[in-house]
Length: 462
Image 1 (spheres, helix red, strand yellow):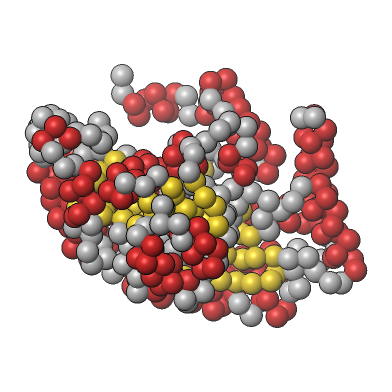
Image 2 (cartoon, rainbow, N blue to C red):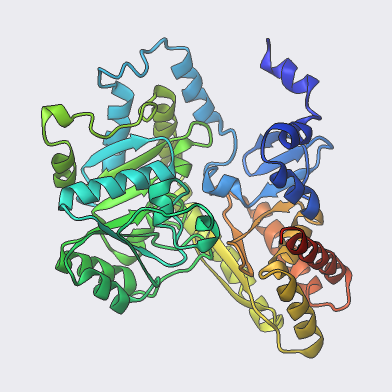
């Protein structure tokens, strides 16, 4: 069987197959908001559908495609590995490629992080960080932030401060304590008993793109040191150049005890996650010969994943993508910020590097206010769909709502955007935001349709 022939023969069946065998609700969501396209090709920052329409991808697989899609240098390295007849996953062995990638990562992570553990995903790195911190400190409690997101497996979900993802899954892990993001007094109260293993947070909260005050992360690290807790930085989304530095913690000059990474490390091809931690933590966990395999991941150090990671680091440096992320992201934010003075629904434009948010809020003028309230009564956060949908349908820009029930639109572009892409984004946002302030208008007609569907769904699920 040739996979190319199979894809060609059945290229029109993707939605039918998902309806029959996978998540049917996801298919319904895509059809409802008009995102049901058949993509047939991807290159760099672009997706192409079966009608040869080109789309600018500002979602980048939730941050996976920092290098863009199908980067030729990554492809070449993966092909070289596939044809090299290397031994892979011997298990009772230590592989060269994992050693080489660990060496490269130690060279770029914050100072003091000297040991690397490899896994397959971001949530696995968080699970490892929780286990490592508990064993190394001899404590069980984990403090996490309200609104934070760390993954959907049991341990990481227990540290995810969003009830939308937790609801209905029963009791999660014990000894997890939630505090507000940015609240040092609440954090100190949680740590003061000196029984907390670790405090885990995203340096910038991905759901909402919430950037902390200058004093927060340095203060959090100081409190962790004072009360004997470890500081875990979840950089699964913010790391590897996303915010214009190798790691988001660098913006505040803090050095975590454990750092989690994934997503972009894959080069967009092979899932890979990594935990970087202080040597004494590693030495505590793997402290005897009979504990050499006390924690592991069967596929964590597979050759393709390691090669993808090495290729990613090489491209980030050779193409100066981290510097480009800082410059291009700052330019996009600077060009969009003036719209907040012009349009009353647009509350704030914020971001660091290629992690950007447009936050919308209830307007003051009567006609817009009433229309806004109509949408919010049907489903909280519905206004933001009136931005993402026309960005997609009219301007062929793929973007996302920043979190459940939020009127925040989030951009996570590949770090390779061109000047033409920059203009594409600015012109499209200006057009869509302006249109959203015209009542009545086509956008608000669409909003009424969304509201009607949302109310119908609520009734049907009662």
